Image (cartoon, rainbow, N blue to C red; front, side, top):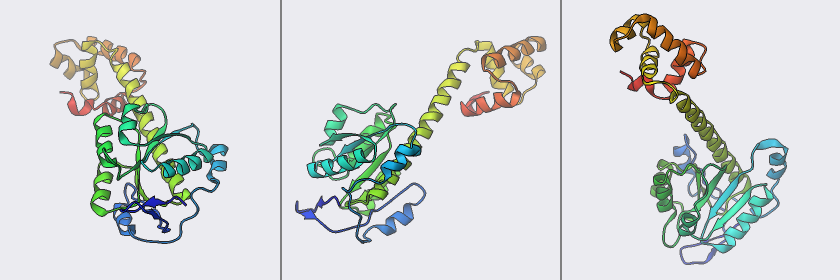
Length: 264
């Protein structure tokens, strides 16, 4: 198992079970702090690699490991590579900020809480401020409730205590990667819809905003100072540009882009 340092710099060889604070299970996670039981050997060969290679994940991912403990970085790096991940290591938060990961590529950040200089929670705040989309899993040997609540509320995917069972670590990583892919796909879909809407003329945009709010052609014509026949032509053109085949599809596009709430 990986061993962490205690407050006096000594190696801690206790087998504490991983504290897991996941979205939707905060209360359960808080109750788990302090529970102890023997943890499986962290540095042994990862049996999850077979599942990953068999298709558990469809894309490669890079794990960005930030920890000031060199022995932990080396041990964790070996395990994660054995599990099929690409791994980048950083000895400090400042080092990660200097070579900030590309948020477009699949990955997540494994982040120690207590580090000299910029702490883990401070780095989380900076990444959030920079608009980073990479999920963060915190690792610590000294979990406390206030810090735990703070990082989870700030958007951390999970918080695990060292030493951590390899199964718990890989499961947390896979959940983080799944959420990353879901959010990335959603953003790509929104970008595509925004691109389609940007092709509308100003008048077509006016008609679109009113159509998705359920207004009839006659009503729209009266509001924007046009004729019903012209409104019908605008509706035909905007549906082609938006690649929509029905009013229902137009409404879905408007809802996803927030037009239903902002249109007048």
